[in-house]
Structure formats: structure tokens, C-alpha cells
Length: 336
Image (tube, rainbow, N blue to C red; front, side):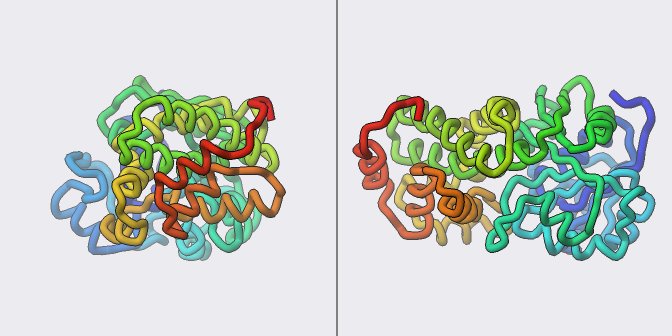
């Protein structure tokens, strides 16, 4: 654990940003939480709880701030916790107050921007210019992190010294942090696994059992690695915490929002109805299935699982028909 407290601002008051704010306050850092919706921030101040992270009392030392300029003013680390499809808007609000040397950025969002097909590091560079950037990812369900369940993640940056400094800020007896330099692979693993978590949920919703889920997860690792390597990630990264690790927990846990979407699809509900019922809660895999399919086609990488999940979500393909199509595809060598 880092013995020198610093000032950290978390931009994004969802479950994941709030959970990491709790880790930081446990480490005695001075933490400010900002969110885009003042009414939610006022609810937090009034009740001492965040509706996005139910059942958790927030410590009084966690500062809530509605003004983004005041929130980041003297921050020594800025945590980017907005969902990926809202990251650009958050960065645009940050831009007038951003100082490269004062404000290293830690992205914790897991997604690829639709339309542009940019990773979050690329969105940051486009909006803010050159910046000191790192990404944190791994098997880390917000609810479990908030309850101090032992968790391991990885922080990756082109600047290893930055990754190590962030490691020291977060690490404690229940939150273990590894470092790495493959920030591209870590971004991609965290983004793409959400798509496969929807597929795992579909299997559970259909009541198909454990065999198909094991097959799905194994083939998902192969598919994720193929696409991730084509996009610039390293093979070993996808075998690590941000790849296999995050895939396993997201596919297996009922806490996962992406798994929930899949489970409801497997029960026969349509995607629009499911996402509408979730309100402001975001399942990143829904939009990422679009981006991942576009990227795979652009690069000529075969991704039958992504294509199938996209068909179920956006084209209304019946899940049982989709399973049959996957099972009756042309015979393959497993090493391909």
C-alpha cells in the first residue's frame, strides 16, 4: 500500500468508478467523485449511498463535486470512469481544465467507441492531445471490490514508471495490482470480453448447462486473441488478468450486467426491451458487439461468436437458431 496520500479525482459516478473510489479512500487518499448528472450526486450527498452501487454506505471523507473544473483542479491523478460511449463527452468537459504534467489519466472504461472504432487511449489523444495515459482492467466486479473481496487487476501504460506509480496508489491487502506495458492489449481484452459475457448469459438463459458455456469461453479466448493481436495487442496479454481473467468472471457471474443482458435474451426478450429496462445502467458489450464486428470485417479476422451475438442483439436472430448454426459450421482444426 502507498504510504503517501495523493489527491485523486474519479470522473464517473457509476458502480465501477465508485468502487475504485472506495479502494482509494481505504488507502487514505483524498478522493473526489464527479458525475455528469447533478441529481445523482445530490442523492449521494443526501443519503450517503450511490444508487448505482446499492447497499454500500460511502465514507464521509469521499468528496462529491458537481463542477468538473473544481473536481480536477488540484488532482494528482484523474480516473476516467465514464462508460466508453460517453467517454468523449466527458473528456470534452475535462479538456479546458486538463494539464498534461499535473493530470496523469487512468482509464477504467471497457469498450470501443462506436462509429470511430477507437480505443479509449485513442479517444483521449484525439480530445486532449498528448497525455500520460494508463489503463486498469481485470476480473473485478464492482460489487465485490466495494465489499473488499480479494481482487487482482493489471495497470498497463507505455510509461512503465507511470504504471508503477498507479500500482502503489491502489494496491492494498484486498486489491492486488500488477503492471505491464501492453496498454493496447489490456484495453482490447477488457472491451471484447463483454461481448462474450452476453453469449454466456444467453446459454444460462436458455438453460443449456455447463458444457456449452465451457466451449464458448474456450473458443472466445481464441477469437478474442485473434482479433486482439490483429489490432496490436500481445498474445500473452490475452492469457492474463485483462483477457482470460476478466472473461471468466464476466461469463460466470450473475453480478455482470452483460451476463444479465444475455440471460434475458436467452429467455426470449429482445435487446431493446432489456436495455430500456436497465435505465441508466450500461452493459458495454451491446455496443461493443457492433464495434468488434466492424473491426473484424475491416481486418479480415474470422469472429463467428461476435457475429452471432451481434445477429441476436441487432437482427433479432432466435438464440436457439444461433446455437444450431454455430454447432453446424464447417469443421475446423482447433489450432486455426
